[in-house]
Amino acid sequence: MLNLFLLTVSAPALAADEFFTAETMFPASADAAEKSKSKDKKKDDTKKSDSEYTGKMKGKILGMNWEPYVQPNGGVQIDASTTAITAGADAGIRYWKKKLQGDLYVGGSYITAENLSGYDVHLGDQTGYRAKYWGAGGGVEVTYNGQTNTKTGKDVLAPALGAKIPVEIVVGPKKFYGKAGVTPAWYFDDSRKATAGGPVPLGDEFEWHAAAGLKWEQFKGEIGFAQLITPVGTYNTPTLNVGWNP
Image (cartoon, rainbow, N blue to C red; front, top):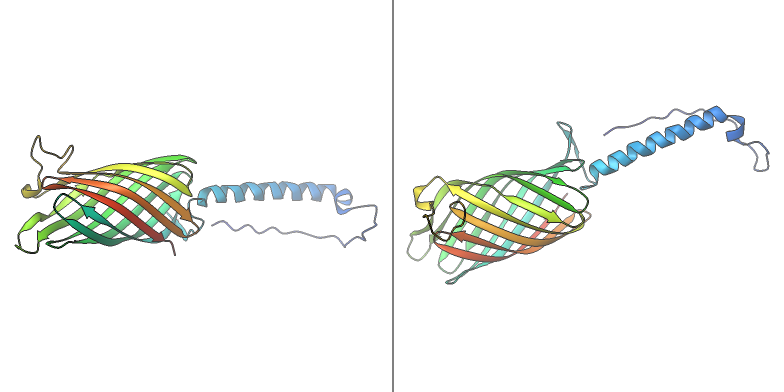
């Protein structure tokens, strides 16, 4: 953050009914002061545009503003045979410089149902462009996940390492917005590979989502819907994400 120190030399105070004012007595000094104020205003405007994404920046890394964040999330997954509850959280660093913005994050989630349990741990980075009323971005996420039938002990989705490619668009101002995106995923375990002509349109798994969000000071909340298509079934998930930037 740039700190500006302005050294001024003040003249003796004048009475309220004096004919001469400081501006007319010292025109050169007055002009310099006005120019300095104008420069200060431009710098303040630059700072504002550079930090309007959050207003809570912690400093700079490689010339980028940044702040930490924690975002709990959860939802209910519904398919033809079962209803499952998911809960988890992400933590990371949100970084930005003017209209370039991104998230570097790590997180995990747990899924549970009557005869099902599963987990997902992930590490990713997403970067994009955010203008006043729209934005777009994408990234890469490394994930390790699996699901098990608790009654039989057999894997529904074998634990496997994979990579996801999330792509997302955002419309609306930064405080009230809507967003939608797709996330195809590829896995390195043969048991998680999708068959040709199967239900998955792209990759070994495919997810699409839509949500509406609100940002107010350090609070962020989103409500939406997501559908995950896997070789073993399709999951429809109403979602609720809440976050707090300390």
